[in-house]
Each structure stands twice: as structure tokens, then as C-alpha cells.
Image (cartoon, rainbow, N blue to C red; front, top):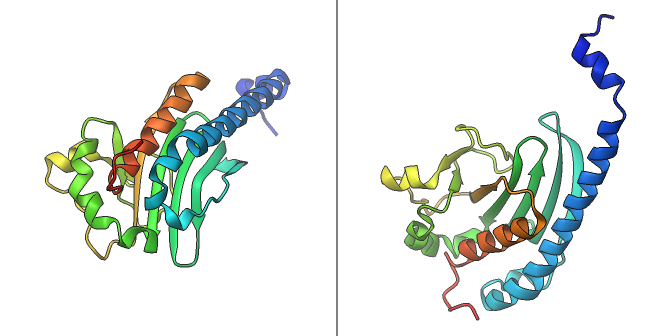
Length: 202
């Protein structure tokens, strides 16, 4: 066994794990507050358009190996059913910052796709990305997974076909302060909901 100087340095450093633990706890707390803010101050304004969610609670979880890196996730609002998916996923991915992603699939998409196509241009200039992958379960921002909505709008390609299996719209956030992070998450979900909600929010 021959270790590099960098590997030896890491193996001797216990402080990293203390900092990782404290940072993880703070991010999970921030996600808990974000869920509360969405549940109390945003989702009720659109409830008639989100009837399938039926008051479901959110879920916060974490893991250590999404493409070899730790991650923390809040799914709220969330519905992962046999016939449809409606999920707003707030995610911290170590070394890659935060992302906020709307995932619609099956019955949760089919009745909304026309409104989404009609209103997509409202998201121009908002740092929104569209998933181009064949699977909805990838979250990196490589070109094989996401393309900028502004690019698709300029190219005349910002339209989902009726047979589209799923849609994922996503925004990145590099802000690490809790208040700004929560505001960004709320703003992002509000923008996405207004693509297919036909009433003015309260």
C-alpha cells in the first residue's frame, strides 16, 4: 500500500467529520424550515390545483453516495404513486450546491402539459434548466442531463410533446445562507406552480 501525501493528510484529519456533521445538521434544519414555509405560506394558495397531493407531508433524507458524494434531500410537496409523480425536490449535493427541481410524471403531468407548454416562456431569464435525459433520476447539471431553458427557447425547442413521459424543471442555487436559501426555494416552487395553476395566488 502506497498512500499519496494528500491521502495521508486526509487520514490524519478528524476535524473534517465534525464539520461535515454540523453542516449536515444545519442543512437538514434549513430544509425543515423550508418545508414549513411551503406548507404554511405557499401550497394553500394553490390547493385547488394540487388536489392529488391531499395534505401529504414531506420527507427529508440523506445519503453518502450519489456519484461518490454525500447528499441531503427534501421532497415536498411529494407524491410518488403507481400512476403519477408530483414532487418538488430540494437537494444539497456535496461540492455542487443546492438544486430545486419539479418532477411531473404520468397522471400528474398529462392534465398539465398544455398549460406548461403555453406558459414556459414565463421562466425565461430565471436560470431554469430542463431535463433532457431518458431517466428522471439523475440530478447533475451535465449537458447529457440538463439544458438551459433559455437556450431551448431561443432555439424554438421549448415544447413538450403529448406523449412525454416526465418533465423535470430545475434551478440551481449557490447561496449558503439559510434565509436566502429558503426564499429561493419558495420562489422557485411558486414559479413552477404558476405554469399550470389557473387562478391568481392569494
